[in-house]
Length: 101
Length: 489
Image (cartoon, rainbow over all chains, first blue to last red):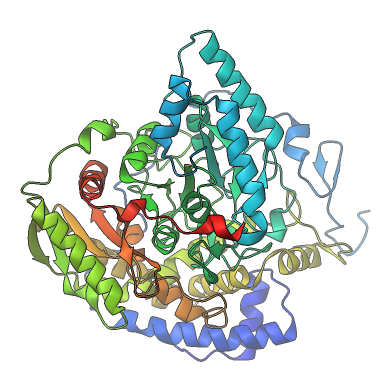
């Protein structure tokens, strides 16, 4: 584990997380995350070679139900909180650089 | 009108006709309004809807219709539980005007029991924090000292119950968010076993850790609410499908022979003397009731905070990916393109602590670090769970502090996220292991601030833990002590 993060790593993680951060915020996070990750180093102390991971506290496997049709929201209900929509579609800026032919 | 009644007393007063539900609900709403500027316990309240619902209960009573166990009783919800009325903000700019198209399972259960939801309480943004200072709107102040925090993240709910604005409220607990504010505000906060109460309609933070629970005046009210809220719900695939015991009957069981586990790991460096003494005193009270003290050993407790903050932030980074500025929530004003829409909407919508946790979780899950951080934390989680499995072979409940200190000062830990995380040192392990735990008032420290005592039980050990808490409260009066809030209105 490396505990001191550099600026480029923090920028990379912000890009992965799709978070726009200001320059001073990037530096603050670099410092704080480095310190938090140093604290996390202690997780290396216990021997976990033969220890299985616990992703979940309950011994549940997949929970299935019958594949039956049930009532759901009307499209306008699902659209109610959308920042922008047109008819039954969520509206976003164009995704491609060029207009489709 | 009394402002210090319990849920059970309030329900009885309405049932007997001592007060109408409308009187009780108006009294609650008046107090919420009067206290708001002083303590900031609430984000929103719903006068019209609440009074209409109260009148419906009064009308039902007048025609001798059957009334639910909480008929006409005002109650508050932490504002990360979805309601079809008002907004569900999660204390975030991201969801400031979000109006949920559906109601949480607990809302259906409470309203089904006749309770009247009067408002929604303040929280650390997306329940991420230990002080309620991370709310995008305002910090909730401690009812015992307005220069101190209420604890978090369910600080609004704990403050509201302590101030007598409502007789009970719901919180959510991912790493201590019910128990810590209950401890700091001098009320009872119960985190049920993972999966005991459906998470349907609870805005997700750490999905393998989150659990909804009650914040009340006494343990009996916690048992009352658990009886109403617990049970299987197929809309939450992690909901436990086991019968729900009669908790109100179960808590009457005497403590004779109860094995109380005490582990030195819970009394380590950094623990306030006043807190240590209060917990020791509580153990002696339980012993005086016939409980037997047994030593337990939980050697991996010291890794709990590190383990928790890897797992919780990893799950949070994944859960909060849904806030993309497209389907609901905040969208930036003039996005250049779709990536800018995502990045700017999220950058503007999330506060610093939420952004920090998303960053930490994204890093822990990213290529090259997944094994070293996330997978390693999941393995240490197994060790912590095994510690509890072994401890509960020897003990029926484990007694510990809730937090190393009483309520800290506003701003004291705001600039040092790690110091804030360490406030959770005694609470996070219960979430990692999925077990149940309650915080009950155990007296006050030298400054007059409440000290919380934690009782933990095994998975589905609700009856045992709540019985221990209730029997303790039968012969002590710490839970009846109230802050002198009337003088500040």
